Image 1 (cartoon, one colour):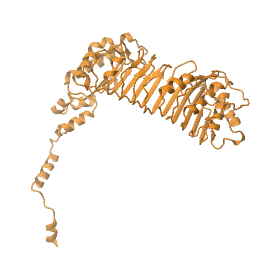
Image 2: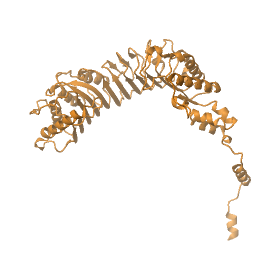
Image 3: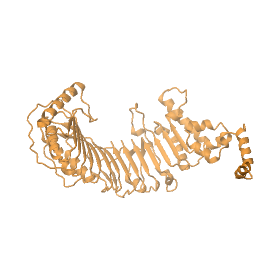
Image 4: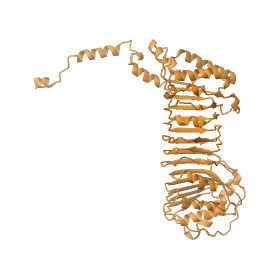
Length: 483
């Protein structure tokens, strides 16, 4: 039996024992160091380190010293460039120190292929020579992801555009600009040129507090593969692009006070807009799934929301709008367009006007006709006046319009305005498939929070009104919940 077991034992290969012995010797060797790892592994480690960590690693060996000079990720911010024992001094000294440290580091580096180059600090036009040198370095290094954010800090009130740095678009030609996949600019001048031919592979563009002189339309047409575009707090007359941006999936335009927004983006999926009520043309986006709109206006915006916006976003599936209405504005323009894909709707509504006038708020019942397949409706309302309405008899005089798909409704900021009561009754009686309707007197609209003393009175009034007027005869107790 012993002989048989010995014959069944696996045979070792000719070099097995030698390999094991070499491995044991190498493991026990005192000379085994991190830099003995393969070069590809070391580069992978380096790509995961911060700039400060990479500099520290350079003292370990000559190989690490050579490697960090080809660091693929350069991030220069206040956090990454601050010494561990640095004390915050004057702003001028801080900027001078920041510039000197970047220059010192870049002088030691080689213009290898860069994955990311980031400069985020409140620098100005007087630092132009230094910033030009940094941008040239990123161009020579064929940077893929470039960030130049010179925006002032949160505590700095000065935003003088005359002191802005002018971003050198002319450096990004067909060759050097083709490497850039994402570009983020903050607090700079941008002057697109008619003969611009760079950024052919740009997929993501973010502009924040950028002053655009000239025609912005000269920049976007060359970005044929652009997928993501964000424009916030920029200065520009309008955004009008004749050429179709077929790859654009995300568009965000906020606080830029445009006169017009016109972009042909048939494959747009997400749209965010915060500005005044302006003409919006998106070129019939057929697959848009989510849109978030915020309107700045001191007057009633009902007609704009339910005509212009509905026409621009006729295929949207989930929609959130922040706007203002007045209880005393009675009529409205009826729109033949239907939101047939809309399933989820959130309306953040600031209400002004006399509390006993009903027509202005009751116009919101038109939603049932505009969105025949709507399933969820959220109404965050905030009454801007301090007057508390007096309880009166409410009569339902509106024409019925049965809706068979609406399942959940949530009304917040319910103070018991006559228009709110009529709207609630209308929705309860016409939403034939309704499973739950929540009435919440607390204001959930983030645009305005009333004083505590006023809020307590209005919440109490709203709760009493809802229980008195909506729970009558137990008609809606099966679906109605009053918080």
